[in-house]
Length: 197
Image (cartoon, rainbow, N blue to C red; front, side, top):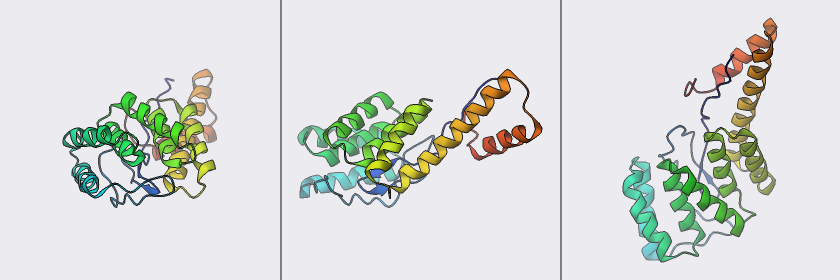
């Protein structure tokens, strides 16, 4: 039996202290569009706030390609603004430029290790690449920083389910499963999205 893990239906963090909705495999729609800054996140200046709102509106419409140049311009104009850097990385993630998005989230995590949002999105990128143990570690770190972070908790549950399916498929590859274990494997698979199956 071949091991095949579906792409997770997980929740990227879209803004400081605000969670997105279940968006995978396409992470292009914001939920709530609330960029209310939490601790460690500065309010954008008035001109930047208008541009940030425009980037969010473009993402909400599913137009990450149009949002990218504006997000890049904002990020370059204020390289020390964590909120703008985060928004830029979210746009890159929505465009599936995962390597570039990962670099952005990792940099933010290095600068602000106490914030769960970059770690949540690092976990999502690891999960999307099939690195489930790394995804689990990043999401657990996000929850150590903020146990109430709903998106990270939901995503961790999804990754745990994927790890369970992976483990059961490895056992099944070595020898046939007993009826009960086969039922559990099938039930767990049915909870995962059909993508990549």
